[in-house]
Length: 308
Image (tube, rainbow, N blue to C red; front, side, top):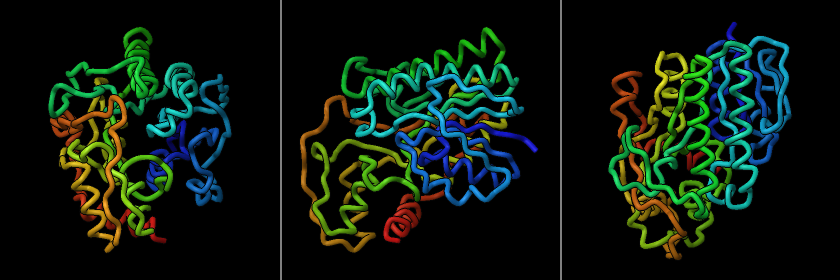
């Protein structure tokens, strides 16, 4: 039985990864300090003998006596609301947390995976964004703590691969949505759904013309799993290239929920990317992966979860 240590295992993507790997027959060690993770996300796993929870901040050293085959570093505040409120913790988990997780992987001779982000591309001047693009990031802007934490984490991961020969993977994760997202997550999908279900005004920032592409969680987990098992050590975009405007998303959610909400506009936050869309050619070629769940299907499942 293979053992996977997942930092941030009680977070949105982390808890889905725990469930997926448990169902695949893996033993899971979940490390989380519940800064932004939710205990309810992992409550159903506690009776599983192959699931172990360690309440710990991975920004601090962690000693493990047991063998580990995979170290999957998913711990970090991940929404603009979170890292605006937790800037230092975000930088620490990107720097110290990644260093500690890499140290565990090295000592256990385990495969390492970094959950990076499309935010390493900043407000991109290349569209769609391939992995070869270096990005356009304001290091001292309001989003800089997250962007630079992940860029540093990528540099550290590559350094461990080059110097220590650590089998390291980098998943550049684009916008993801689905069940288990927090209602007050601060991102577009949970914001719009909770507002629409309550028939409250839906807040769109700017004029809504900025574009995003949203990947349903089951597709994201499948892509992460294929990368985990691969021999690929270069960054790989994991996301859905189906691109549309934020205003389109708001209108679609109103339609799918049958809401009476109206759309209101608010000023666009500083450094908010005007476009965001992955070039997934590398994932298609090297992982034989591409998303399968369309936005209507994914949103219906997500709305159903939020409704219940």
